Image 1 (cartoon, rainbow, N blue to C red):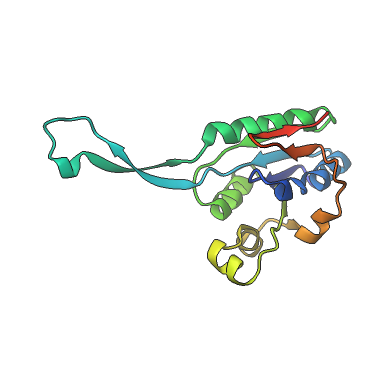
Image 2: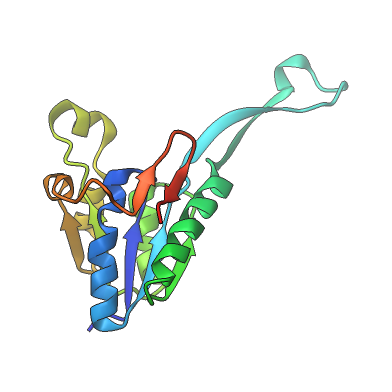
Length: 172
């Protein structure tokens, strides 16, 4: 039924709580997991070192992905851990707006299912930050299995995927 399952991760422990569900589904259906971490659009100024240019033109607006290399390393670590459990994993680090890129990756890789966590924001927090999970759920033509924030709190504290102060690492 499911051949390829997309799991979007944002580096948070809450997002990672979708992994046990995804791993279980992948094992049950002999499916491949696609781990995706979107690098968001960040605009900044870049200095142009050209003495002939007027001062007001020495800085140009430049948009680029945020932390692309860190995102790739993060996904690679998680992928290696999951592969030890006998599940085939591929990773992707698209660049853009998270909800749009998650849906685009699901279509590009021909995924049958998206499994993701909801941060459970409401009220002002939801209004100011938006809800990637809600946008994906509403816009996707691919089934979405949403893991609620409340369900994530019930996971054992000694999760395989623990966050340390500098980066994310898997505990043995």
